[in-house]
Length: 537
Image (cartoon, rainbow, N blue to C red; front, top):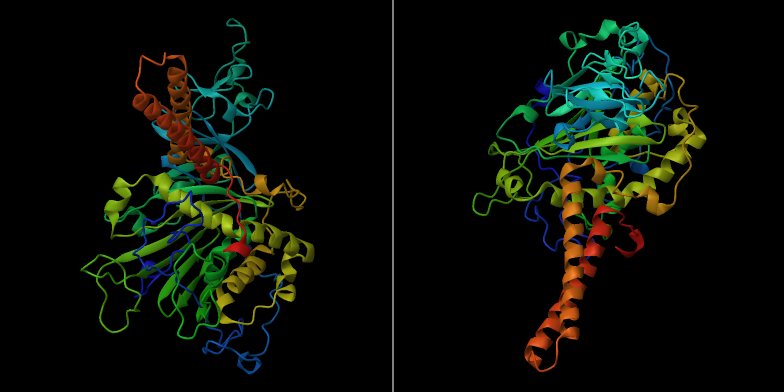
């Protein structure tokens, strides 16, 4: 597990906001004083010549670029990545309600996740009732702790066995015991407070957890670290999601004003882009390692991208410094960026994120989780449309022709090229959907639907869902108060209350009405739809 040890670095997190984009956001972000940088990662290209290099000077010339990289094409080798022999994260436990079943899709499989109180554990079933194929995720947990299909009342136990068919005569044959009455059960386990699933319901994999476990990341089990999690369904595919998270060079531009980045020695533009010395090492079927001067990363195929670094903390004010740690060993201040990218279906993926750190842990205990999610969702929105369109252009040329269409001459693209090489070499440039999909992407929806936050995040996040309902109730209360105050003034006789009291009540009514309007705007922008126009940032 040496690869999981952090090297001395400073990190700018791509999902920890430092400023806000509009008046509905908080004027002063939670981590305003933390100058954290996303680690950049590198592959040593001296032997493989996989990556071209760029001069370390801020302004490059054509002379600084080495000969073009070889094409990243599909390679046929002895090893072939098996998408169905891996563990996949489904959802953080903190966002699952034990009272109801949850429908989720992973690798094209329709799953239902539910809490079996009889066995005191989370179960993952095929989201299909064997009777008439109704979705079990639309059902309920009955009073005996069984998963009930609400179409005809069939009930199932934790092993997928049918417990009762209400329509079957009591004195008739026990049809509920037939094999065809059972539901397929997928191996599942809770690790790092996340439900994981093995996407093969064949009985031979029932005890797969004893032979192969989900990827283990020690920092997620360290009680001294904060571990706030979030999740969101993304309207572009797994491949684009992974390579975007591996690309720190886009941060100053696509997320301008949202995240703090290092100021280069020579600033060539407003945003402060600069050369990044990145390398990829030890690329094999299981993933690869990334490295740059002040950070390291690890791609654990197929889902996990883990970037980690140390940050030097100013002991006087508790904020992180921007200087790189080179000479003296840094104090024990650690930060990790962990992204779990789940293939859902063509053109759709799911992101689970967490940023463990062992400093400022108290912040997470007093600040509601949904406040952090506001900024993190804004960052996701700021390049969402770009990536949605980009994916369609890649689909037009074919994933294995990615290198022919994309010009990637600098070291800043090392991890992106490394991922494409892994994807093409071991997976043939495509996800194995078992013939369930033709490979075509779904039609692009209207922009407001594409960037919707409610169905892609809020309904799946217990914290944001609760906050949205509470704020909506407060909005209604303010509106009612405004109407009541105006009504009291209108029906009260002139000599019964003084002019001062009447003026005060009218002022309060106006304030309540204005507050309800502001709150409605806040709710819409942060829990439903927040458009993003890069031309005006």
